[in-house]
Length: 326
Image (tube, helix red, strand yellow):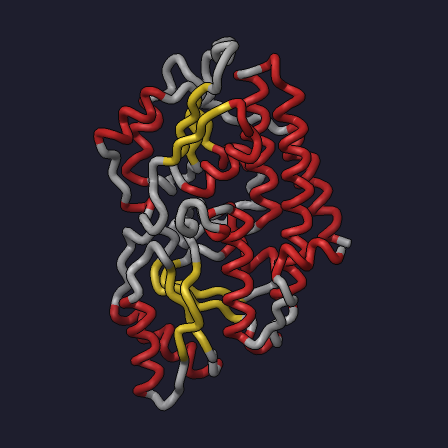
């Protein structure tokens, strides 16, 4: 019952919230002919914006696949893309790290929206680390990404009001897809035997996923990859992996695999064999143009990879065929 109440609140908030405080000059109108330009930071944000904008805008993402946004520094071409963009979207919550200052400077004469601001006031939802830092990895919970969808839709409808129905219809259609994806993730993750429902990764990017879908999660590094793990941190996690007899740990596409390999070697030295269960997409999606280069494909890849390595059941045909059967 709590889950359905939580979902209902998430859906209501996604439709009603318009909390991107950095959006300015919303009276500006895009040209009547031809698409306008949107610049986004991460692949996840760019994909979300494309789902809502459709043919009304050209969306350019500046942080490529496999690149860690925590450590990313703006290039000359990035600054140019941001200046040329009619609207700018980014994640926020310090995910973009060194790029954040540049993004805030652009909020003069154009809409600049941090999609994470859709969570403003939702303190009970947000995850914090021991230093009270907010976890920026909100896309790992599909219901959370539904809220971000509302922020994108609100911003584009304000910027381009003549096509308000266009954005509302596309956002509504994508919401249905995300609802089904949320159900799929829950079903697959719950198929993992409870004693093996433990996710050990390179850095602490999966907290929202773990909470939403009933998984215990441990990262070698903290919320940001700027925080390097100490030897004692690795030793403690090795002891945990051995004690709990964890069968698999996971590397990430945008983070060095050295710390995870150290876990494997440390466990082996204590007589426990743990394998690398696969590569997950955490702060970056798959290659552009691929299924994994979309948000839906990224989440499905992660869930299927985790389930297969930890003894869960992946439906034949994955999410796309599972959805058709529902």
